[in-house]
Length: 229
Image 1 (cartoon, rainbow, N blue to C red):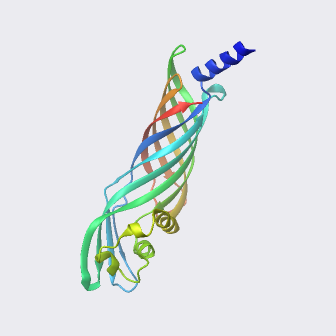
Image 2: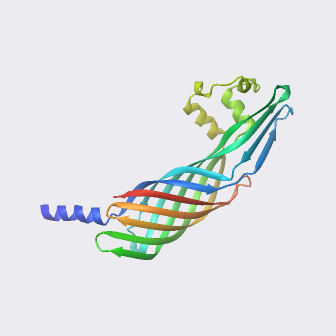
Image 3: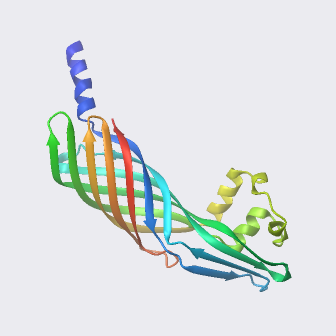
């Protein structure tokens, strides 16, 4: 019995059923130049996208399904730096950097199309698949800045407002409050390389936004590492 238990442990290490991992990611997502004016025409906020989103994700996967099928869930966080100009009445203009913020959930079903292996050591597989996704996206806005600063006007920003006095938790709550929600579909091509319990993933996918005209479809690339379990 002891020998059988040890054998099962060895087989589990060499042939993991799935795993957990982290990836760095990059998306091409250009929101262009956005200019917003308040109802009283006293505040103008202009933000210019650099066309790229960067971030990270956490994912779990199960790739021991029959006939080469696998399931993967990914939670992604992305930030895009934007050049911004704030013009408030006669106080003048100030330039600086702001950021858009996006969180996404992806559920992907994929199928192994090609596999290569060195027995008991390494494997490499190419997968194709697709699935569903949902997103919360926030871009700089006058309402968001007003909510964060708690100011009736923007004079606090010109005076050098200290955002650290608010607290990260409160800021994230306000970012979520002003977010735009969307759902979509995606297609994905993956390269998965295994060496015992260690896995390397390269995923290229295209996300189709289905139900929100404020968000556009976009391509993305993730490169990450996982530990097989």
